[in-house]
Length: 434
Ligand code: ACO
Image 1 (tube, rainbow, N blue to C red):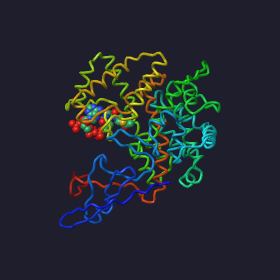
Image 2: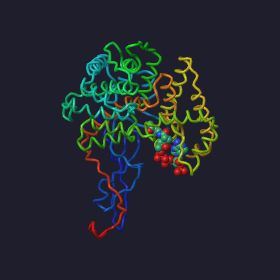
Image 3: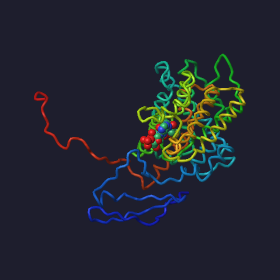
Image 4: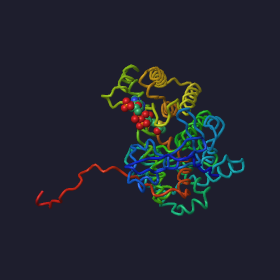
C-alpha cells in the first residue's frame, strides 16, 4: 500500500520581482522536499544540480536510508534484522511485493524460481562467441537484454498481470547467466541449475562444480553469500537504480532497463568499487607500500587516487551494511581457517583513515564494498565476478523500483535540462571554404 507524501507547507521564491510559492512535501520519515515542477513555467528558470545531489526524482515506498544516522529500512524493516534472519528470496519478495512472504508464498516463489532457472539453449551460442576473458559484467549486461528477444511476452502489461512469473524468471535466470559468464571466462563447461538446491547453493554449484569434480557446498559459505546478497538488495535512488528508472521511463522493457542498470553498476565509483578495493589492497600488499603512504596519496589534491571502498554520497556516518559485511567477512575467514593478508591491510587502512582528520572532516567511512571482496575471495570467487554478485543482489531492488516507476501516475519520461555554454551562434561554412 503506497503511503502518499503529505503537503507540509510552501516555500516562497522571488525572482526578477515575481514571487512564486512552491509546495513542500513531507515523506513518512520526516524528510522534506520542495516541489519545483512549476519552476520553469512560472519563472523561466531551470535548476542546476550536477550529480543530482539535491534532486529527488520520485517518491518511493521501497527503501529508506538515513545517511546521517546510518539507517537502512526496506519496506520499514531494519537491514540488520533482515540480514540476520532472512533468506535472500524473502527480502526480494519483500522489496518487490511490498510484504514479507508467508510460508506458502515463499514455497510457491521458490518453485517458480526453479521452474524458470534454465536459459534458452540457443543463448549458449552467445556465450561461446565472446572473446576469451570477456569481462563477466559485459557478458551479463548483454545477456540480460537478450532475454527480451527470447521471452518477448514480458512487456509492461504482462508484468502487471503476471508479476510472480516475471519476477521469478528474471531473478532466477540472471543467477544462471552470471554463473555461465564465469564458466565462459575460465573456459569450463556450463553447469545447469538443479531443482534440489536453494538459491545461493545453486549459484555456488553452477560456479564451482565441474564434470571432473563435485563441489561440496559449505552451509556457512552459502549463508554468507545469502547475507551479502541481502546487503546489496536495494539502496533507494543510487546511480544504477536511477538508470533503471530512467530507461524504464521511456517505455523500454524491464530487461533493457536492468541491462542498462548493470552497466551503470560496473563503474568503479559505484558497484565496481568492490573489485577496485581488492586491486588496491593487492597493490599495497605486492608493493609493500605503507598504509600511511596510501592514505597520503588518497588525500592529495594532486593525485587522482581515492581510497576505494570509502565514502558515499549519502552516508555521513558508518554505513550499517559495511558494519555487517565486516563482521561476516571476519567470521567467514575464521570458519574457513584462512588468513588473508589483504584483510589485515584493510583493517589497518580503515583504522588509519578513521583516525585521520581529512577522512573525519569529510565524513568518509567504509562503504558496503570495502569488505565484501575479501569474503568473496575467501569463497573462491575471482575479483572480476565481484560486481556480478553485487548485480545479482541488487536485482530485486531494480525490479521493485522499475515496477514502482511504471505504476506511478506522477512519473513522466525522464528528460532533464541543461545550461547551454557552447557557441551562441555561428555562420555555417561549406566544406570547400573551411
Ligand atoms: N578517498 C579520498 N577522498 C575522498 C573519497 C575517497 N574514497 N571519497 C570522497 N573523497 C573526498 C573528495 O575528494 C572530496 O574532497 P573535496 O571536497 O576536498 O574536493 C570530498 O571527499 C567529497 O567527495 P565527492 O566526490 O564530491 O563526493 P560524492 O558524494 O560525489 O562521492 C563517492 C561519493 C563517489 C562514493 C566517493 O566517495 C568515492 O569516489 N569513493 C570511492 C569509490 C567507492 O568506494 N565507491 C562505492 C560507493 S558505494 C556504492 O556505490 C555501492
